[in-house]
Image 1 (cartoon, one colour):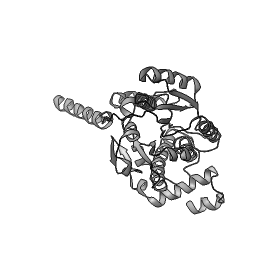
Image 2 (image 1 turned 60 degrees about the vertical axis):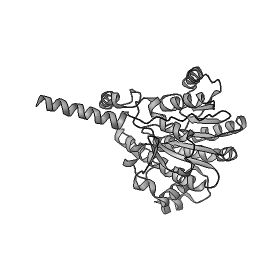
Image 3 (image 1 turned 180 degrees about the vertical axis):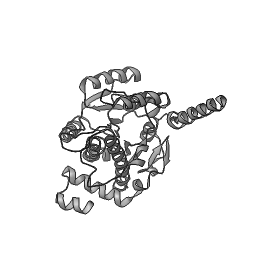
Length: 322
């Protein structure tokens, strides 16, 4: 019995390691000299590892970060690791839609090119933003939708150009309910649910974006980076911190988690797969709601309405979309 128990534990360990920790590496050597890349949340984890790789390829890399001190520290590290001095910090707070608009104005004035936009930043957090929206919905999806929308006129003249959005397999637990998805929530379980909803919205956004960018030579991809090690903060309940420590050996580090983002940003010949969802450097079929074209169109219209990008009556839109 003891031998059987040991075998089962080893088998469980192997399964967890295989499904959570093992990842395909991006092996292309595509040069990005003369290209400009913008990465949100590029000061830590997956975003920072992505920035290092793309800077090594010769790209001008712009980190869009909320915290100036952490952003400056990341810029120093990335320049040192990549040997590329063309790594720049610009301040962006995705929890404030006015910050997104101000960031874009500053970017368009200072940067003549944008070849690759990587929407990487994300949170699992309850409460509401300064704009009164659900934290996860705004930071992970709505603010990135606005950022992408406002930068399309810079991406199009630089085509072939790309948009890469960090989604998650957690989208399988998500749901898009237009009556509630944008509303603030409290508590860990509700925050996780909102995160899952926002990741589903990411994939649906990419699907509709690809349709609207057809024949522009701007392509877009949603990515599951794998389950990546996260910093344990005091804001987590004690049991969550314990769980994160327990499974940490099975989780990917930032460099491993960045591989599919790097692949979708650089791999040649995947343009025909625009709008698709990628896992471990391969296109995968997401959940059925993520493949719903009608849902994708409705979400686009819903985003525009929330952001004031259309003149449609808000209440009328809410009734129709709900």
